[in-house]
Length: 98
Image 1 (cartoon, rainbow, N blue to C red):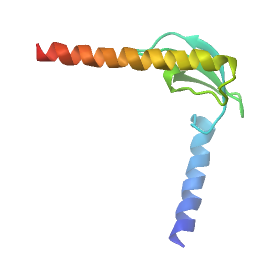
Image 2 (image 1 turned 120 degrees about the vertical axis):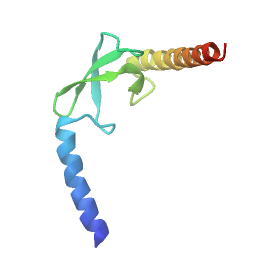
Image 3 (image 1 turned 45 degrees about the vertical axis):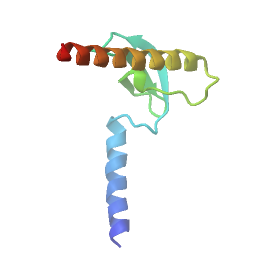
Image 4 (image 1 turned 135 degrees about the horizontal axis):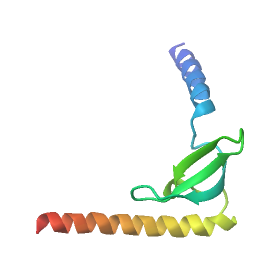
């Protein structure tokens, strides 16, 4: 009984939130790479189900299939971003120890 009530309420909340907020379960189209944020590039994306526009960090995006043209771009950027971020953390750690 509690599970059905909880699932029903959470389901309603989730549906309401999805109307205005992006979700990891949604499918998007990459429109352009916009102005960089603090430590990441910003992607302007369109949710395909309702054409709403959002801005995500480029490193958060993944493709549905590895054969899509944008896969190489996102994969290469993710690898670079992780390496770059780790280098900054290492440099900050070294600087605090000196």
